Length: 241
Image (cartoon, rainbow, N blue to C red):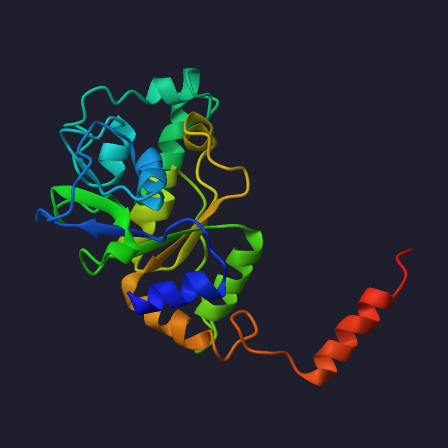
């Protein structure tokens, strides 16, 4: 995974890049098949674990539905009222339904792709991933965005709505778009995500272009011109009002 390593090194991304693979295959690596959620599975993979999620062991009813591992009808314990009265993310159930329908129009759950979703350190090179998740700060996001549009000037509209699993995995898998998300506040608080971490989700087919731009763009490792350096020094030396 030379391209991924090139990106993480150039941007000084410290957490391991996380590979996401929808597959029915079983890897040779040791797998953590304990009950868990997508939001802590991402952190586990960034810290070296190979995590598998399925209809049987995904502990989050909403996450199970969003990942296409079970239909709404087949998700035991899925209760929209809990999101309203427990997590208090919407003022009432109809507002939740409205929000949910909007996200489903954009990217419905990827049902039928596979019965399992693996989250794993991408450097293990177990599979060619469907997605690569980078856990990044604001400056690293800025650099990734610039690198991603370096060749054609095109970027999709980023989607930060809905749950962390929808924005970080479902939306980019279904749409094929690069996405940035802060994730939902419940997921962040439950598993104590670092307050500065964002998730950059990059479909595998977009990784080579980002890596190839690193040597050519100042968002990567290229040097700015003398003219720009002079302008930067002048601006920095200007006294603040």
